[in-house]
Length: 292
Image (cartoon, rainbow, N blue to C red; front, side):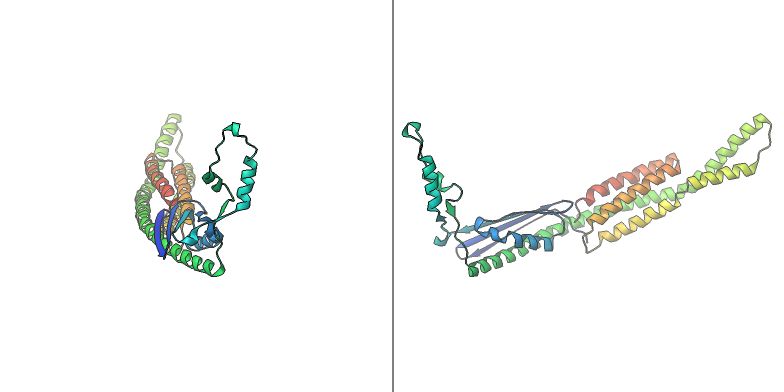
């Protein structure tokens, strides 16, 4: 079954005095694009997180946001006294007359002054194990929403395909009548002109003209291809593999065949059905942009 690219998942985990909260959101995108936000001391895992996301999600813009709350004493960041002294020296040339008040809190917030404690190898492995499990759990919830949205997309896509098939069936019934009507109009007009000129009517000429018109206006091949594309479209809607790009391609092909039928048939009634078909195809094209 097809999946939507729109989804949301969240999960939490507590390990003693450390609490993790993860949110993953995804929206449609032609390709895979991840925006990963990690706490500074966990930024070393950005590459691993990206690989994990890519292994589970093939398309979409993915926003990954992990927050960590550490209430233990070990959470205190280390002060880089050298950096702080450098800032103070640069501010030292300001005179009292400049009426400048140096806020120690603002100094501490400057880049490089506070540094998160580095993780040792054991802490790093433990942190990644938590992040990996939490990420997989959140992706599972995201995928559940994607499946639900995908089911709704599938029903709408198949509904549009059914409408196209209905309009196409009417065109198939109408097509032979177009040729008969052309032959009757041609005979009537030829009789009028020949009657005025007093010349005999050559039926072979009429048959030749009708045959040429039939060849130019033959839409059987386009009707067959359009039906085949609809069969492939329906099959892809039940595929277990990501089908968004293939569905988008087929929607373009459906439109191309519909345009050809409309131009070759040269019939007002068929043209009306082609308008309805193209409207359904436009809805298909819009919806498949959300399919993974």
